[in-house]
Length: 504
Image (tube, rainbow, N blue to C red; front, side):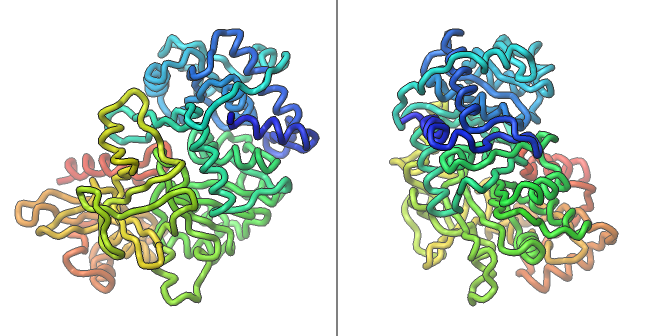
């Protein structure tokens, strides 16, 4: 089934419901949303776009993002969303790799793209786009669960990104698993798109279309903590996806302004490590509004979930351990901790996280070698290191490439980071390994001091010694104004290693 059928059905029975909002302004009900998307699909067909072709989206978050996305699906084509923060040359490489003939853009960042690619850019702010979406429509092209719906380009920190083949069946499984394992959706809800719609936030659009919810795009086109707080107060009950760094910034701003997140019903967080100190502070301030998910582009948003109750629980004897976990397997997958050969390990043993199930990709786009390396007998080799406890709670240690081996012993940076973040003088921290002739690697920490706090390595060292084994503590501490991050909020440890080379 074509995923766009959900839009068709919602429009048929609840066409008058508000669907697309720009800030507080309703710009389309569900009937109009469907009519514009189906008209766009018809126009794509006239322009020679066939089922299975790829159409790129290089757009900031806006209501017409969803019109374009669903129009592509109705036409039977696959969308190739590109993060709007990428450089035009980076976007051009993705467009070429995807074989996209057409790319929908917003004025910013689209203005720089024309010189970087031969693909036809269509600016959604122009009269041409309005004409495309104001004509006769068409019914959704039949699709199977194995047909490509979304070509998701990974956020690799070295080399070119890989295109993950996300099918209609994968997105349906992710959406239904959201309802089973993450949260409910009703027509009274608003999905707020503060994180990039090219990634996790956009992947959650179909389940909110299925539920007839409102789709709320901030006028800023991205994340602004004050804007999120304002819109939620005016448009609640509001749900949203956020990266952990966004949760941190939202908490900081809310506490600074005395606001409690009125109107926010749910914040689903994922996409990077959420430190216990940060989520404890967020729950203490906002209340039980947080749910954690763990996924990868290769299994989008659907590996595990830590429920609202688990995130807010302070009564269970092991609540602290559970809070630093990423929860339990979602309904549509199996999780295994494997040794280097993929053999299952026992509860508590550390190994690579492996996943099998309906949301797991069939492979990478035109990259058989990478596909063969990542998929083994139906299991996705995530490259993440973790443990499963006897109750099925999954705890991430680190990416396998980030593990520090000192004196022959594995040290997981996240454990050290967690310890340092409990110090009042630490706002952010990232830990990496430094080559050592004696130990192989030493642990070093890059620290962003808390506002108004002095950088005191001796105090940080004493703090670590009181909380973790001596061999795990950093051998050196470096003050840094801000941690280098990619466009998705993930800390770039490769960049930290370059900074380390320059400082030593």
